[in-house]
Amino acid sequence: MVIDKKFKGLVKEDFRYVFNGDIETTEFLEVDLDMGLFVTGSIEAGEYINAGWYVDAGEYIKAGEFIEAGGSIDAGEYIKAGGSIEAGGSIEAGGSIEAGEYIKAGGSIDAGEYIKAGGSIEAGGSIEAGEYIKAGGSIEAGGSSGIVAGLSITCKGTLSFGLKAFAGICSWREISEEEKTITCEKFNGGVVEYGILKETGLEEDRKIELSMDEIAQKFGVAVKDLKIKKG
Image (cartoon, rainbow, N blue to C red; front, side):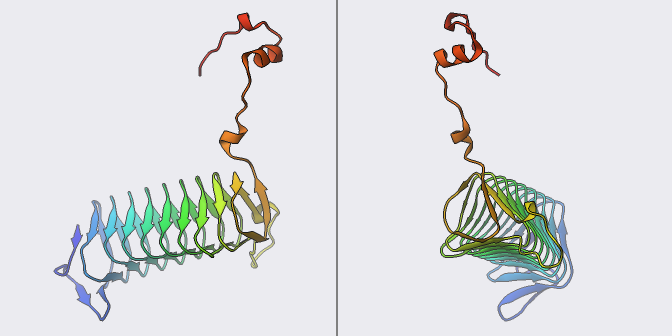
């Protein structure tokens, strides 16, 4: 499906195009407009969503594959993609932001609930979530920006930000030590203003290098009797 100036029901306002209702397709969704698009309902595509400008929905934005916009991506509810979510501007949702792959924004990333990515989370500005922030890769907030989470911050790669990080600032209930822990393989800059920092070490740093003599000694056998089996 392609949304252009001729799309039925589209109304041009001063600085954007408006569609009153939901936009749904089981295939891809291309937004081919010279300004941003605001949809009062939800935007959903079975495949990808691609827009040259910003995309804004009063409800949710969802794609089976990736979501990409030259400007910002904004939803009153959640933003979810089976693949990546990428915006030249900010990414903001009243609910959660979730991607099967990475999340990347030229500006800030802000979710009223949680932010979760199978890969990395990267922002040119700050990263904020009302609940937890979790990445299968690294987490990076750009410039002099920081990271704020109501609960924990977790990533399997490096964690870096220019200013400060706050984890576990939840004010609506009691939380555990785990829920205010910042866990990463390597901490790479900024100041943890609130929360408990836990570094697990990079995977390559955890690998053990042993000589054949050391292996033989460890298992109490002669080097000539060692047989290396892969897998």
